[in-house]
Length: 433
Image (cartoon, rainbow, N blue to C red):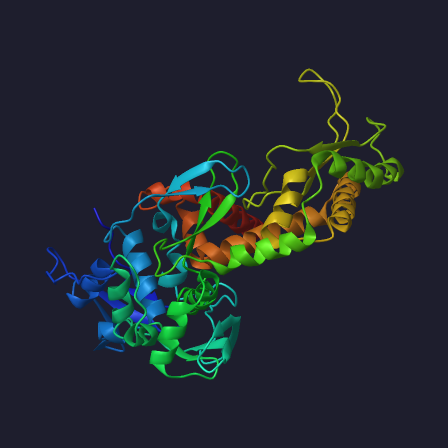
């Protein structure tokens, strides 16, 4: 059964609206033959009506980013249907089958916390954004594109065109995309012709900017991999006007320049060359004469926030009835270093290895002293990340009633963030006594 809409919502862009959902049967409205027709009908039928300062908001006047947020929230509440998608875990590469909107954190929308400078911003409109050059008439080449505001009403020609088998770029579609200028060209007919004749990569550069303009990063869900515990950020809603294209091409170009990441054997040899002298000079606990170095080529472990580790440190364990004495252990995770190379492009991996070894040795030294402020700092960072994603007030509510029935299935999908939030609240309470 669908859940109730929050009484008030903050939408992308900052404005706060009152939500009134019809009781009982929904009022019928024709579903337009267009992309996202059911979500559009939900608003146009009056089944969900928005008010700002007591005045009803005309659905067609909603900014496109506002509409997509409402679409995601309606799906999260079960008012709109969502198809399951399959993604590959960024850490263990296992397949995860998920419904992204089911894991969308509602707290920031319901509690007016859309204030994050990274998650809650969209592409600056009216600025000239660089793109791969596109040929224009008279031997001109457009090297930038300007986008303007798009509303639910003005985007309709694009949504109608996308509902057909093949997208046909016409002047109305170009205007519906919000393309104000391509280089110095402002004529929608010329722009439509240029975009229709450009390459997929060139067109993808334009559509990537469209997505950045109308989908803040807040419209994403943290999906926890059931196999390795890593956090995978997935678009929510997953279905969008265009598929992202530019990022893969850019990374591929960078990788072509930088070559392949070193093999596990090469990585192992260099890491030992760097680490072993540092380990030999480091102070040792009384129960152990060495610090073991492990180069792990398997699936990396993850921290409490679901982030794959580059390195880790485990203090010594004194033997007894439960097992023998175990020396301190410093581990480097090869696949995390390789993933950074693959996802972000070439970097100075040797310097990163040195920094990681030195970082983990700091944990070792602090551990011998009995207090590790770096560990506390890292846990604070994880807690802050949980707060910005899930919402500060939502975490407080979760700490009061973590297992409330209204959490239900959502808890299973985002348990990492709730646990971290609960720990933070408990520590804060104890510290204030």
